[in-house]
Structures are given as structure tokens and as C-alpha cells.
Amino acid sequence: MSRFPLSVQPLEEGALVDSGLELLTEAQCLELLGSAGLGRIGVSMAALPAIFPVNYCVHQGSIFFRTAEGTKLHAAAHRAVIAFEVDDADPVEHSGWSVLVIGRSEPVAEVAGGEGSGPLPVRAWAPGQRDHLVRINIDMISGRRIRRDSEPD
Image (tube, rainbow, N blue to C red; front, side, top):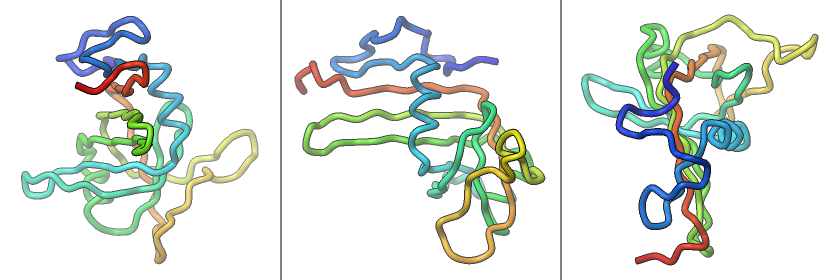
């Protein structure tokens, strides 16, 4: 499984890709991905991009979120290739990071969160019935961080 987009060659940890942008390693990306809890999924609707916020959890190397009937579930039912993005930014310090995942989505039955721990700890923040659990299998992952030791141009 490729963890980097075809246009990006894996570099050493901390390598700068462009004046102050640090390319994150796969391990760093996975750690940041697991730390956020709120991200955006990008799907195609009639050949046009559509972005939706979702709260999520990472479990056994996949991303999980809950949804209702609609666009996200339709994409999952057709095992669509989707983009998933999570980031964090500090507007005061002008710092931040971004992780991008590309993978196929699919609806799944309830998944146990761990040894007898019950269902996954992900619940939709939005009100209403969001009974469908969707998994995003990570096919590619990449990330960047703005380096604080670099001055903006």
C-alpha cells in the first residue's frame, strides 16, 4: 500500500519541501490524524467536489464516522475513493499542520472499540439519526507542517 501521493517522494523526517513547510512522516501523520476528532471528507457529486465536516475516530488503521442517509453514505455504499483532511492552525503564531488521506469508503456493521469495550467511541455531533457507520480505508496519507523556525516570505 502506498502511503504517499505519486508526486511526493518520501523524505527524511523534518525535511523541508518548500520554504518552511515540513513534510511529515507516515507515523507523524497517523499520530496527528488520531489526535483531532474533527475532519472533512471530500466526495464527488455529479463530477463536482463536495466537502463535509465529520467527527471521527481512528481504529486499527482506519477512519470511522457515523452518518445518516445521504451523500456520504451513498459514496460509501459505492466504495467511492474519497479524500479526508484534518488540520490544526494557530492564527496568532502562524503555525499549523495538515494531514490528507485518500482511500475507499464503505459502510460497515458496528465495530468493537477494543477488548470488550463496546462500540467505537464515535458519535455524530449533529442532531438526528446518524445510525450508519462508515470506514475509510487509508490507501495514501501525507502531511505538512508549517515550521515555526522559518520566517514567512
